[in-house]
Length: 220
Length: 135
Image 1 (cartoon, each protein chain N blue to C red):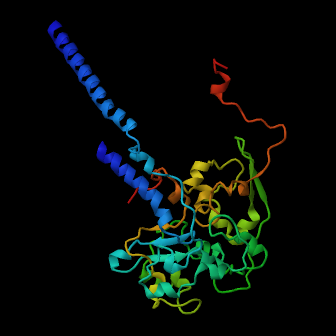
Image 2: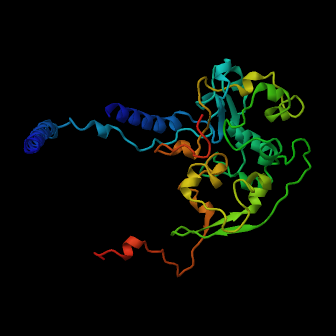
Image 3: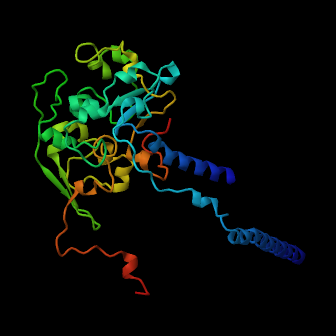
């Protein structure tokens, strides 16, 4: 029994020695790199900064997803021709679709074949209180019902009942709840579009709730 | 270990490079459920073009298009039967199905996707949904 432990400890010691030796060996070439000017880490060549967008609303033949060898591609309408005169936005298609509709610049049909059918518009704002410091969310039914039918969202995506819908920005970013459309077709979730939903400022005396860890912090 | 780290790095590169390589219109849907296998180019559906002419409700409530790229299992047999795209692309409301290359216009081999979607722009890979088993 004793010899077994002895062997084990010897093994552990040699292992430690080898690791220590290896670590020293690994450190040695690092010093060389530091002293040699110009020979810097290859990791620095990988620059994450995004390139400036060179072209917005590219024509189908130049957009990278249409095959320019296909004859039909060149017959398709380039988006910029259709967007001429429409109010702009800073994200998505760079067109403010809701404003375009409000201003009467678009006349999309509400029925497949009958252009006279009018949409069933409901003007009801829903306010959702936000726990954190972001302004509260105001959901306007009006622009949504101008485009969609009640059955598109209720009851499958949103239960039409107060406090029944649990949602978070991470769920939305991954394509659930609002993210079923926002981030795919309707205006996307970007730093420029936060305030489109988070639009109701918090009361003047509002303070962010303190986290439990900060309240019990012994070094406070 | 090294191999998995490299594949991780490569996939990160791919995620970063893909959205920049293509400059397609936001919400353009590439549908490649069956097209490649049938020797056709994948379909590119331009949302922007259709929303100028129809409200979302027409396709997504009346025609039964689900809010999911590739989730409708559209086939040409269904289209000539008057379902999905065939509700309009029948020579009565819009041009008919003999104009193959107008829809089947994508770069061959492209996977089903919504171009410019938030999920495409996330740097970290997303988890697969638990509601439905992956196919």
